[in-house]
Image (cartoon, rainbow, N blue to C red):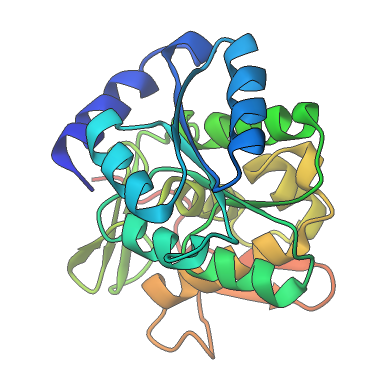
Length: 255
């Protein structure tokens, strides 16, 4: 993540999320749609910067340090997927992908390479604004912090007070959504968390039908935490119902 971007995000996390303090980068190669999205967001109070292609979007990312990116998929020269991959090389900024294609494979691809949300055209201005607010809420509002350092076992230590996760002696970086998901799983260690409950707590109640989001982020956590993600020992699947974090030997191992 860019150092200046990290500092800006830390300052905003300490503030109330006010649209007037939020910069949204909108990327689309269709001038009319770009203007409509810009005007609708500006009416809500957001500061909006625009880009008409992927290369321009990368420049805006460095110069304007947006808090959120709304990124069209179908663009010439550099499509939205490639642009997103380039963004993720330098930034964890929340990204909503926008596309006319409804194939699940496209949605999964976008989420797998780092998108935080996916919206299919045509959509209403209200729907886009709702998704932006939900994404900002979970990105900039940290999960409630336990004032404890939890030693799960010799391989995994979690410090919710410092927002740190250590795996086999190495500090692991989690994206905000991954951290919130881990918090709710560990906070309910040994208890089944249903799909609906996790989607509502981590993403928001409007995401209760988006089960593929949960599957992907569970996979992300397993890839970062488990020795063998295909045979997890921390995050266990209750098929067709939800997930459960393994029981802790001691509820809270404080240091």
